[in-house]
Image (cartoon, rainbow, N blue to C red; front, side, top):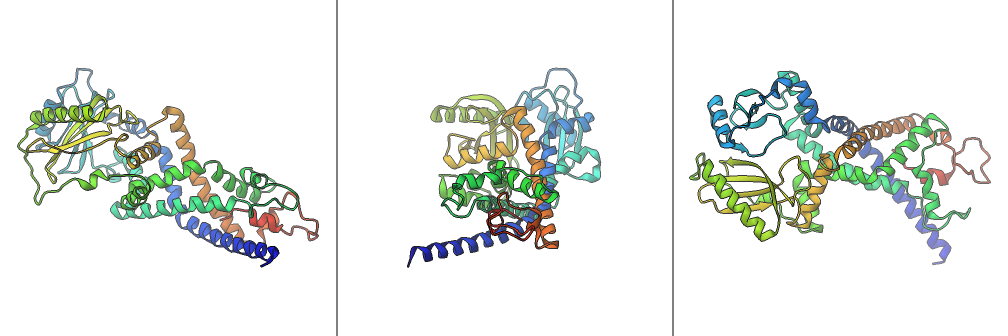
Length: 427
């Protein structure tokens, strides 16, 4: 086959592929736009979840200045006031605020003064009918499940997966067609450069080029947040894909269950704490890490296991303890161990993705960047819908967005350049 015919066939194949990618980008973008607007705006608020929650609910955060009680004694005090056993102990020094317990029987979050052991208040987490006390938890539920429970979690997981795929499709659509230089002598990178720039020759031109350029400049972060959302909401898919590339053990999926819950283990809380400390010290010696501070101890009757959380040199951040040890509630034997880093490559990657998603690393500058990213996600979704709507109303919309360098044979005013049309990333 002559070289000219090969080139023509390649060009037609590329055009068909680009047309298919454009359809995928358009309809996936439309399908997930509302979800991403909600996730982006709510996520920007959640960056300062604890600060805003404290400001909205000072009654839950007003504590005495006395020294905190022993953690095991504090657990007993809280259990007495609730009339039911609390199956967790907060071992950390805290941030100067209240201790927070989860009362499983009532599904309520309980705030306690660590100095007196007095219950300051409680809330059914995320139930907006209780008023502003649950405003921030409700925004949190809205962020990852549209406040629709497990159905919303699954739905948002599917949206996150589609978003991840669309990140790659959108990137492809910004690339200039063909690898060779253009007739005017410009190389591939030179032809890609306009996609990174915003032009404001018209309102539509400004909207279109913002959508394309912002998507490029933020592409890496958008992919991080999309794929980490899959890790949060669509765990089996995430583990399967990541595990195919990197070694990864899903520790939570390997934990054994019991035929019937074991409400009262043989090890009481003081004995369990001693066993936890000994077990973690053994893991630290074998794995070569250092324990920095204790986090908490909890018991799960459905598994018959205690879980001991600490801050260690394997953690990526100090906001919450990430190094964990599970051990049998009767024998004290270690059942499982996990840490953000140092276990396997897939686990380390996952820890970084989740820490970046939660703005738990990088300090204040990164938190501010995440706020800006959340607003950008909403703006990209809105501008994508606006581009689609305008083109739907005016099929010749490219006449509003003329090429920088019209070809010599273009004589009709406003007629679009085929090169420019093919180069465009559009929704």
